[in-house]
Length: 258
Image 1: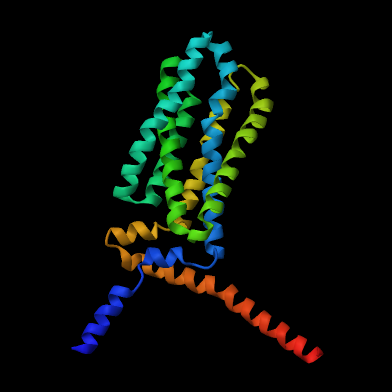
Image 2 (image 1 turned 180 degrees about the horizontal axis):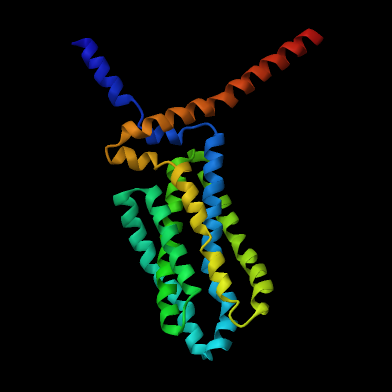
């Protein structure tokens, strides 16, 4: 009876998989590779979000639009973002963080590409609404993913770094627009083609990004998440052991010198 009670107590006291992820002493090389992908996803997201700002003068000139028309087109993305932030959270809770991030990336990339083939204000407005929905759904869930898959003492820095990399997409898109738009009256369409480039990172993420450990554990899939946690814990412990050995060697050398 006593042994049964002890084993039950140990099971109760055993930390959850999510808690073990939070307590990792450092980010592992695997997590740093995830961070590269997440940063790239954010970069294309921010580049696409600001794409119409650079295309607007050329679009207005080619289609003879008014300032009010441009205002409607600009606001279309933000209306879509409102919808996407709400829908993205629901989808992430129901279907998982990973597949919502990837699905939202495919979604906004498809409609960004559709913008390149728009023939008038009406269809371009619809495409920008749908693009905005995917853009914001991706951002909202990606930040939640960072909070669930990195050590708690690094989350703020990692989220800030991811956003910083994403913001780099704005000047990159600006430079691309500077050289492309002057080449022809319809050259603005290439801006949206570039905005759809996030699909490439999305495809890579299918194989390289795991599903959130917290989400898997909360949805009865802890058996699938456990190997991820154990691998990360093993890799995270290696630098700690290495540092301890280095300190012992230094101490031994100092003792020998004395």
